[in-house]
Image (cartoon, rainbow over all chains, first blue to last red; front, top):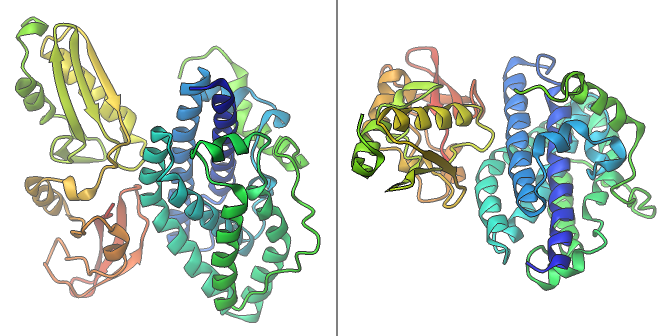
Amino acid sequence: MDAAVRDALSARLLAMADDELVLAHRNSEWTGHAPILEEDIAFTNMALDELGHASIWYGLYGELTGEDADRLIFFRNAGQYRNAQLVELPRGDWAFSMVRQYLFDAAEYVTLNHLKASSYSPLAEAAAKIATEESYHLRHTGLWLRRLGLGTEESHGRAQAALNVLWPYARQLFVPLPNDDVLVEAGIFPAAGLLLNEWTSMTRSHLADCGLTVPEEALPRRDVDRAEHTEHLMALLAVMQSVARLDPEAEW
Amino acid sequence: MVSATMLTAEAVRDALAGVMDPEIPVISVVDMGIIRDVAVSPDGVTVTMMPTFSGCPALHVMRRDIEAAVLRLGAEKVTVRVVLNPAWSTEWISEEGREKLRQFGLAPPPRHAGDPASVAFFDLAECPRCGSTNTTMRNAFGPTLCRMIWYCNECQEAFEQFKPL
């Protein structure tokens, strides 16, 4: 593989892996705290699924760079993480976590759909595998948005408030990485603009069905570089990495 | 103890038929349809397997158990490869495997033609206790990644179904 392609692809894979890992960790915070037992089970399962997907992306990243997933996860600082800010925000209330998960699931859905046809076969194979599991997520969160949006005044108000905060953050998922054009040209990864269009029409239509209004887009103020993070990521990593860092040489 | 060169792929497969899924200990990795290939060469044995659900914590245990089972046959070197392609499907669980799931109390996954989502939410599961399809899905997620929770309106008891993938 050409060095420019390898660098661009490994940057992309790391972004995808970090998104899944950080979201999985946030979602796992609901384990034991979800509003009802059935949801506790469901959301914990989804967190575990995302962790599995993260490990696939870290694996592909490792094949290109020789780096080890556990070192990457437990020994990088916040500034070295490449996840979008969307997934590091504190879990908020139930509506906040559901709206976030829905926006993320929809982004994964449109991305995986294109990646199934990627010219880099390990990426295409992984996308096909992950897409089968993701269909359960999108259906689940899509239904939750309907329940919240069309439920009571209280549930609608909470879902709308969450959407107002999260919509601008979600757009960061579609900010091109500096060398994405190399990947687009090689047919490895779709153009971010294309994904954004597909995601926008998909989510707008469903959100409207749920009685939710997409906020004004005049200020796409969260379209920042993925090296930039909120203070929440540091707090998250402090919890996630604390045990591994107690004894970095320990074997698990 | 036999030398690795005398081992046959068939003998390895027979041994794998005794390696159980740690979360559903009545069904073997062979019945689950996750063994993609067995290759025996003078250099050792290579078993190629596919993960069921990619986040399944049992994957590591199955991998270890497969390796141990082949080593017990006398192989000197065993490599267990995990591949994602083709993506594993519940369609590959054997008929015997489906029957074992039912006897274990887990409704087998509904058949689908490559589109699990088309049946996952619409086909009614058959209660493994009384055989009734007068059932209601309670949760598309369950106690492990591969299970859904149902309720039988005849028995008035909850049961689980292996999730179609």
